[in-house]
Length: 357
Image 1 (spheres, rainbow, N blue to C red):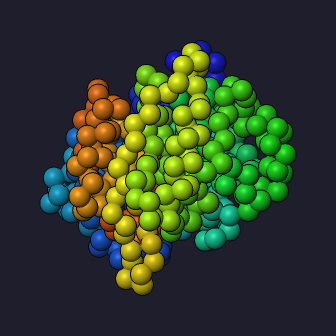
Image 2: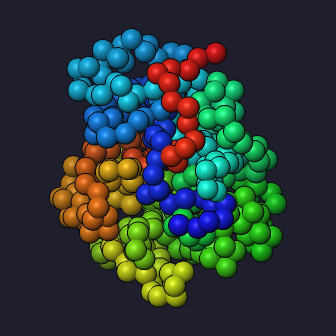
């Protein structure tokens, strides 16, 4: 663990996991029941081992939710409601990015523009500041508003100053007009996130059909403890992703740990292709897992490869139990399990039962 100001790895101790509940005024309106079922499964697994911070839109009835939580066996003592309005539910990308330095916590509140202006995001962009004003964060936690677009799903860090990301996303002009000079942008990223500028790794390859994020890294490759990289592989030569994901794997083999050693790579199996009712390919990836204090929550899709994926993640995180969450409903909207969550490092939150203006 670094002594300097840094963005901690996901397996750093956490106060809570942040989620934004789906609602009728979001894109989930026509499939709200299916979406909520995923959130119930998530809370059913998570709420018995740690706290969960739940952002609720004004259209959501909290009493209805509490009744359903009882029915689903969710531990409500660890569920904390924040009454704030949102456009959508992708907490990974609109949630706070929290840095650590000793006992200090420092929030970087980047702008969120709906993945390059693809979707409305004005309310999501205001969520972090709204939570700050409601007293969700501890006294002394600083929040800095940064007038540049950056999403949590585009950042993968090891807590040792290394960043893994994709050029397709971070250097896309639909995010910021001033990010085209890569050296200058690396300097800004290093200052914002407490990175070692020599350990910013840019992937040239890797994407998922049906992904609206311009190739977020959290669908492709992830750090794990002890010099491990977990990545989404594709072994089907006739699949449109085969060449790109093979090229991405070759890139990952060239990377080195802070100690100068090759990473131990763990390949996740390629899930059977998923399609929506209109025949459009959906972005199913096992790399979109969530690391929590005691668990690794893995997205599953009701396909033959689910079991093997869980075994690979158990190998990568031997100190945590792997729990599968059926996320078939989530990929209908282009995201999966990691996309709907954001970890909040320990020592950041002032946890109460609820927060409202």
